[in-house]
Image 1 (spheres, helix red, strand yellow):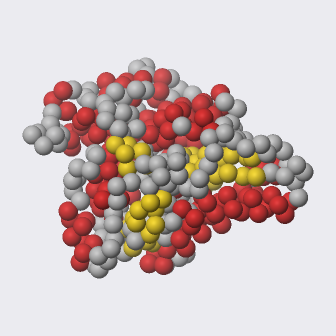
Image 2: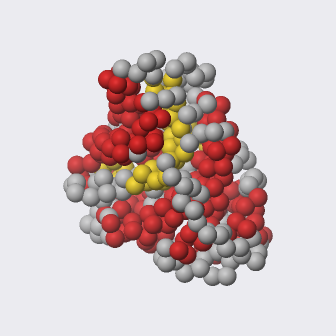
Image 3: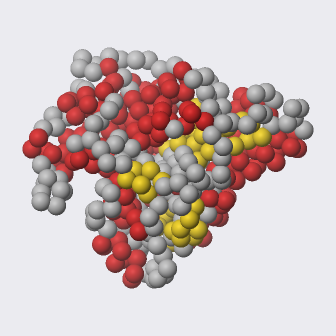
Length: 398
């Protein structure tokens, strides 16, 4: 795996704004400190006018989840679901009782351990560590190569059994391929799923530090999507609303640079922000810089522990991630990865030639179903085989 060297420019106000790689691409118009970012919700919104407005509905799901079950614009989505035939047994994420809320904590919430529920019409279970995954031991067994996945809803397995997730299929393929390679000594693979629905890049960083490294991974896969900026906004705004410690200095510096004040954070009697739109407008120019620093912190954590890291860019189903809609955010994700010396597997064309209705979990939800996860696994397996250094690490040495 290779590291792309990027030139570095220092800003007068803050070193965390050194995302010169974004300028190199010529895609962005930056002001004097961070940069002007078009509203990612607008750029990512699906143009499928005959379908449910997915980003708005997804935002409602995620805001409600992050907000501890509060109703954030979810009523319209629920009504739309009923109109297009949502089955009566369809249990959404917030109602499935699979999340444990962490009062005043940066993570805000995590999956409960050892749950067994029905979620989106599918069985949903977690192991003793709160992963939507097979049972796993805390101590890595001898002769085992562990891969830890950081991600959000698609990676967690939103709307599919964990056995059908692309992560679980990757583990099965690695183990089958290892047997066929007749490695001596034999090698076993565990792909550990640390992904949680609605987790922002910052929550993935915190998960890496607080949970992942204790399992001694041999590789970290950081999963990114074009919705990451939206998740970042929801997470950051909700922490500010609840006066949760931002924990990382670069986040504190962002609020200072953005000029966030007490009036921006005022809430009504229901605890909702009165000036949330204004707060978002202040913060929006800094999101991609925050992403750069967040991925940089993740990469540094891995390197300090001698653990390789790769970014995998995962698509959503449908026109929300069509080539024209995804081009800019995917280019930015790749630029940030290059800036931080992180190799990228771009899987965003995986669904381009497929009919969305065949690979989405429902007409109102653009997460991939089991068939979609199969496609993601095949695309990722091909990427692994093509990456000679990673393939050699898996199948020629420990």
